[in-house]
Length: 70
Image (cartoon, rainbow, N blue to C red):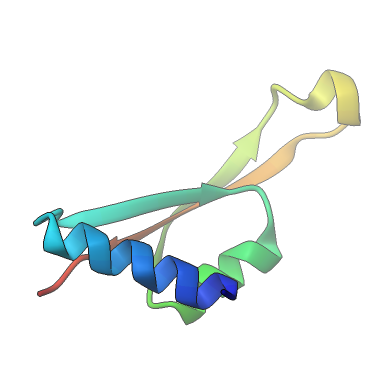
């Protein structure tokens, strides 16, 4: 099963369980673009510093959300 179908199956399950919405976070711009293609809206973008001691730089964070409509 590809990623888009897996995500849609999860969203379908959430709708059946009457979950009203879903938020996802990623540190990858590429993954963020995937979420956007699946109907998620970008809610927040920022930087995280907790990996700075390993990567020697801040990492971006993107938070996406989607309303689960029946």
